[in-house]
Image (tube, rainbow, N blue to C red):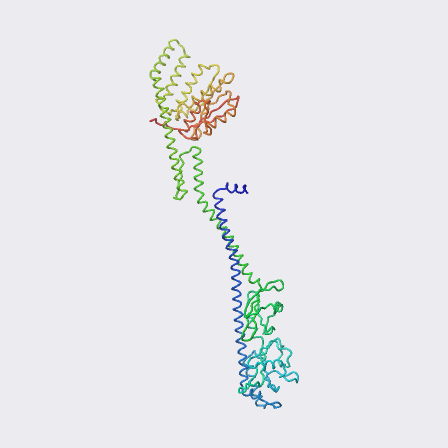
Length: 595
């Protein structure tokens, strides 16, 4: 766990911001998708139930209207004068041909005007009957039929018989009992209200079938009707409908439930008709419900993926706008770390990063100001020391005295003394240089040569030297007295420490905007540990100890204080083979003026 925490802490701000943004967006989208799909699933199921119940109610209304229309026909037939006369016939009394003809005419008229009517039969209380397209199968009295008995028991109601099988009635038309349903209505005496007979009407199921076929429940749902006894009045050709058990249907006029049938869940909704005492039932596979939800979930997933991709792109862009100035500031800080104090942060905004950049710029200005103060203090200190030295030496008196000595040496023809005195004169004249800090490379080389001439008078058998500096560099200017201290180090720490005669080479070359000097000796060299420590001191990585001399480090400090830490000294050495000190100095066309 700590390793993962450490890994997270070490990541970049941009990486962290992207992860946090994407995590927040992902959690939000997934939460909305999960709860949204659940809420939509429940909502869609409730809406589907309401919609289905409304459709069932509409079908129920259409069927009720259709049945009420047919009941009205039975009522009109019961009020017809000829039919009333027929119903009042006594036992054994036959109706007149005229009455029978009028009755048949009336029945034919209703059948022709109502195509759903397949046959009508009139039966009076004495068992006498007449009909349109219907007849008695056996001689058994029709008054003993169950449909007749049910009708006279409830004379104010119209009985509806679904699938009228097993009755003593047939028809000249070719249809089975499953193709029709029957309406039965008792005819009462308008005065005494006694039952005089019964009207039987067979109806086609096509009308109800057409109503149901125009109704679509989901993708594969269906509707069917049960009568008050639980018998099927109408059902489409479907194997599921016959697997629905009556005990599953709860009490109540309306409701819904889910039931598993043949390994699949079905949503079953029902509504009871008050008019006909029928139960209208709708059956919808749960797969139809889930298909919509799954489609929504699929669309949600696609939208989620697209949103995450867009969020990643936008997050990358916006975090880039936040991190880019920070990286720019980090880059500037790296340059400042290397001593390049002229860097500046430019911001187009005034937000926190812009304010941080302004503080960075202000800090650099303060650092440069402090460096300048230190430099000026050091410069003034050196100038004061030099002035004291000059005051002590009395340059003009010194030059005159050296000229006198040189003249006297010429009188005695002491050429070696003349050469040393001339070198010493050049050494003082160039070193003092009227207090100026910068001199041409020509004078710096002449100063170093003068120093070597003096040293050769002491170490003639021990020392040899060579200058390899192109004359094309003589025009450029450098800080004065940067070669002599390094040559002195090479003599005292390199050549004197070796056995035999040694050689010092002073070379220079131009590299772009740099002038590189190399002072190389073939002396004793420097141990690796000491070499590394000296380079660390030169680079400012370590503080100088007192046992080190100041000449070499003074040259490095003067160059870096003047031009920055990108310039200065670097030492290369191999023990027993020699040492090279490299000076990196900016190329200057003209000397700076000393105030």
